[in-house]
Length: 361
Ligand code: IPM
Ligand code: MG
Image 1 (cartoon, rainbow, N blue to C red):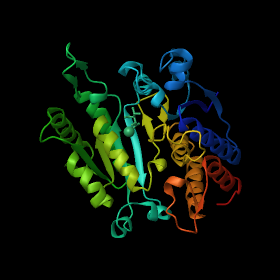
Image 2: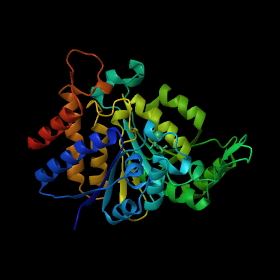
Image 3: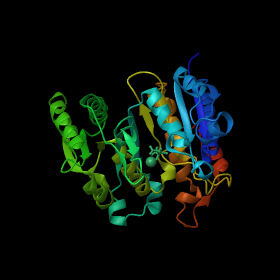
Image 4: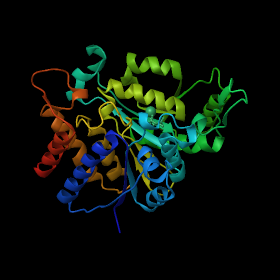
């Protein structure tokens, strides 16, 4: 059957935001005459409670068998005392590795309607920005050798990359840059780390094959600064797993809120994995206030990259813009302006669904 989507709501607000993304998928499907088949599986804390492990074998199997996977978020204080490999986050890392989705695309753009939610000065926010972080997702420090000395006094995590891993990630980034403005910035710490020097060497070897892409290099500390000083200088940023994790949270905040950022994780074949970049937000879970737009925008990426339904993806993205233009805000993106209508998770989902149902251009 076509359009099989495995849903992995996970924990905390993951359940609330994916429920709204599913409603939006059904609405856009109805509009375009497309149907989806959903199957829901457990991951993270929910899987630990039910099955004793963060990534049950049947979850990985159901994800591998799907056309695409839509994930919420994992983790929470209930499971914080578990050891590394038994934590909810280990389930997420296992799923990413199990699906072979080595490239994590994290677009960060400032919706003009959210300028007042952007913490940057007006003269910077006014220029707008639209960048894409291509984060390596299945290697580096997240997956390198780690350990503790027998006396527990020394601990280590290893940043390790092969030329092959870097090549496939950078190829994805070059391709993305070619389809956008043609600018690629490789972010590393090549003044200190040998693994970063291999990133640069690999990038320099690849770039002649992409004459239409202009490559630049930046140290990660400088990039962290430049993102708040002048984000519009960036188009595509390619970087390692760890640096990409950190820079994408920073990039999300300058769009107004981490509640806005979607992501697509892709490999060479098999289903893509789509998830908001935010976490399970235990502090607001169950309150009905979480912003579902990052999950909804992740569903749009799923339509585009895994199901080749570009018109549906665009319809969802423009419905989100429209809802923002109409003044609807979740608490995280509300600026306090009296023209704004602050709504909860479900009402925000309603607004997007209603715009899709209007059958306007
Ligand atoms: C993210 C998250 C995850 C990561 C955590 C939950 C393991 O922060 O998707 O950015 O570090 O990759
Ligand atoms: Mg993160």
